[in-house]
Every structure is written in structure tokens, then in C-alpha cells.
Length: 115
Image 1 (cartoon, rainbow, N blue to C red):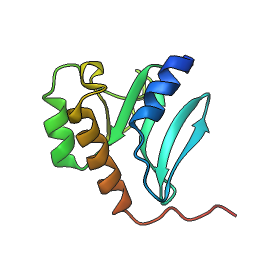
Image 2: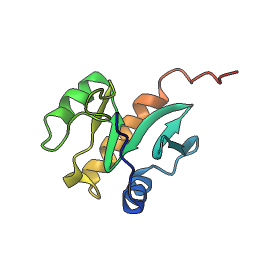
Image 3: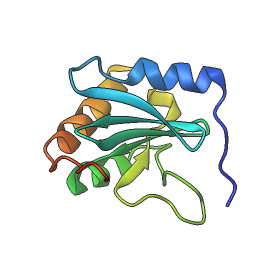
Image 4: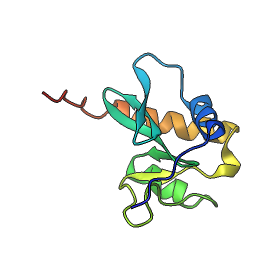
């Protein structure tokens, strides 16, 4: 499985979408980036693609937006995530989707620290 590397522009674009909220942190992941709340990832960067973890109803709604699609490796996309359409980046719609992902994941049980 080939893991694409994001460009510096991809990383900057990703960070520009991460909400400046208490408890949100950005961490490197396999050469890419992830945005986490309570230890759970709500937004990820895979190459140039930005993926969001959403509730089922929101996933279904985002899937109907042109340009969305699976997130992660083609041979094994990440369940519960969809790629944010590139055309939405920099719009109020992108901010709304990111906020929905953050709210959804913030409501999940916190990830337990590994020993």
C-alpha cells in the first residue's frame, strides 16, 4: 500500500480548516496529518485529500456532494470518513462540514491512553 505524502501547501490548507477550539490538536500520522479531539481523529490529511469523520446521516448527505468520495488508501478506505470536495475548500460549506465532524467526534467516548 502506497501512502501519499502531502505537499507543504496541502498541510497549510489542512491546518487552515482546523477549528481553533480548546481540546483540538493536530498531530503527524504516517507522513500526513490528523486533527483530534479527546484523542479521536475527526479530520485527516491523506496526500492532498482531506477526510472527515461524520455521523451516518451526515456521511450520506456529503456523499451526494460532487467531488466527495472515499478517504484513505484506495484498496482500504477508512470507514466512517469521506473526502471533502476540493471545490468546497475555503468556503462556508467546508467550515460547516468540519464543524459537524468536530461536534460528532467530540460526542464520542474519549480515546483511552495506551499503556
